[in-house]
Image 1: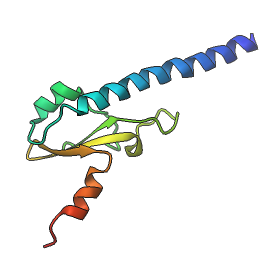
Image 2 (image 1 turned 90 degrees about the vertical axis):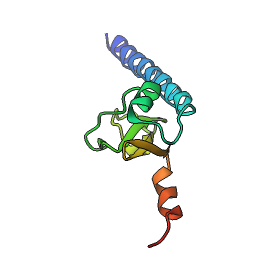
Image 3 (image 1 turned 60 degrees about the vertical axis):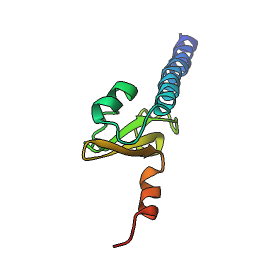
Length: 108
């Protein structure tokens, strides 16, 4: 009985990580279709719904999983690609978009 439980646990992890991998591959493929200036509706049509994590939720910053860093089943910013909107238009995306933006913005 104990062997069956261990086998079940191992299979559960393997199968669920396969689903996550498929989502990640799909998100990365869909991101290739993004273009600056797209409306939120257009982005939704390409990418689907963003993650609905309360810590990440923001109307102008959408997150999509793009890698697996841990198996804690928590969606965190370090496992996600960010899509950034301004005036309801996509202005950029990618894991380090906000970092690049800080260093390339003009100084007042």
